[in-house]
Length: 412
Image 1 (cartoon, rainbow, N blue to C red):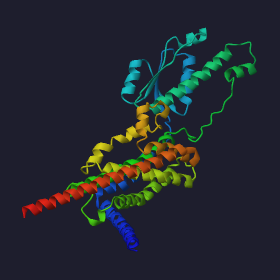
Image 2 (image 1 turned 120 degrees about the vertical axis):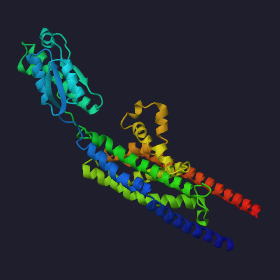
Image 3 (image 1 turned 90 degrees about the vertical axis):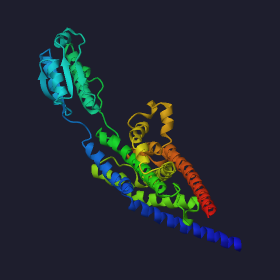
Image 4 (image 1 turned 180 degrees about the vertical axis):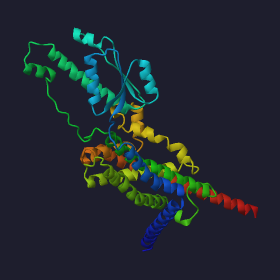
């Protein structure tokens, strides 16, 4: 009976202490303006900011200048067709490259299309000729617009010239020569071939991880600064168990980030018309281990933060790196093995890959089983490491208290 009562007392005390730590952490969050910024303002502003920036999806009317040394009917037809495409606007025809470069330097144009003087002559001789395209590579979207427009016009005119140079053929044979294999281009998932639909979902997932790391890290640094022994765990009877500390704190972050996830991953994509073809229940089940993994990962890292400013100095710059190694902005097959392995230390890598496949491509949980299992493994691993770090902090805090007590006793 005594053992049973003792067990009940321990369980009751553990639950009460967990609730106390949860309330205490909730107060710490709402009392700290810096943490409030990372937990609420940044997740509110950043998704809107990125969605507004890339809301046009694709570049239209990209400004192009032309240097036409040929000045022939063929070169003028090429220019007319390029200008007729929706993505390119020919703003000027310059007499030489020097004038064209000046316009690019003044940002009046972002590309130069150059026709050599023998352009038309070589074509009529049946020889291959060249059209040179010079682009401002500070924006890959402009480069894409110029390149695709020029290539499409070049291929179409080339096919037409081949058909025209074969006078013995019938109209039907000329049609086959121009378009031997009819095709229809249908974009799957990202129907507009847009930049926002491609990149913003990955950024939304990354925002959740990074704000948790920065916010929880700042809370950890603040706790050390306020502690007389510079420990992560305060001197209190409620903070006397590892599990109650980890569970109490994580409960606070989970409750707060349920609201954040609804805004970031449901409301913002709806506002800007981003692809949302995945089932809500599937997305919810996938986000559960992702949120756990991010929270325990952040709690583990917070154990190494010595001040409030430490997370900003250490982790802010990692956002771009994590986006690159996630396998979205650059194919994961082309990522070197070291960076690929490093990426899987962060929940954002399987989180981004799985979320995009579910939300944008309509995948089921079984189709993202590898990413789903990885997130649960990460959640379990970082939960254990967070417990180890907090256990170490509890023991360290006790030793420092005992040392202080002995020192004061000796002074008496």
